[in-house]
Length: 374
Image 1 (cartoon, rainbow, N blue to C red):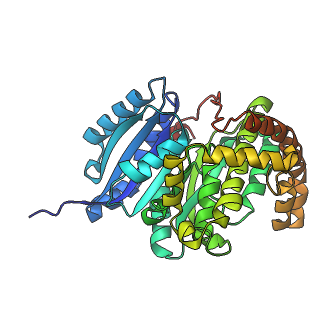
Image 2: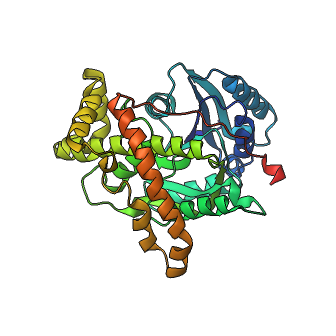
Image 3: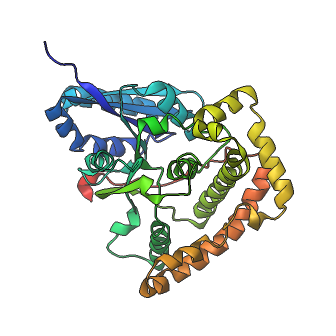
């Protein structure tokens, strides 16, 4: 009797009004060598596009591509692909639905990815999976995120400043980019994202993963970088878009600080070890619990530049991880990050005071070129 392929991984693609970009994203996904390797091993991959609160043709475009790939892909036996339409907008809800309800219980690893990126190295997903299989101490595998401007033959001064800022971010250990990562299913299913977490869910996941759910000091080795794995994303180019994105990040990082340092660290060890169950219980029994904590935090803080520790000085702190030549190159970017944090921090503070926790502006971008033209 022929053995039924076992689902080893599940890939959740979170999409909100990505009609213009999702075709290139999915084309790059189906070029991954992971499917050939799964076919040789008689393994199966579950692929789910989570179209959340979309008002365009994102779901229809994804369904068309899935149908074509399921018929014509050389290794079509190695995957099942479908679209799930969620009426509620938001990455937090889509993440929770995929991890706790939609992904197969058989899956040992879960890939989370955005619908507006390109996985420009065909071995990326396989290398990320192997990184976790070969390192039992790691809970998450990440790749190298690359801004699209990195591939421009002629870079403007603004481009160079943006790339220096990215280098600052990458200099810190244990970075988790929410655009694409692979996480052990058992770890992911012990995490629940509170409905008012807003942006910066990757920062929250990183904190829980690197501290073994706040039971030990942070250990960067819990997040493993897969060598040779990369994806491309479209960088923000206009000052207004950069300001809005930074405002979103500061709102999210403030809420992460409140959940982790104000709430969870004060809970008994048993509740921290079952963090997902604890936080889900709060959302179900007392939906306003987190907004009350945010209100109390703002009353105690009273200064927008102190929303969370290190808000304005993070860029300068990360200079310490660079050599002298790199520090000189990245110093202007650190200064720009400091000024940007001050300005956007004020707007984030005002938004939080008004009760806004779901700030997620739609970015107006040109879209990434398909892989063939790179």
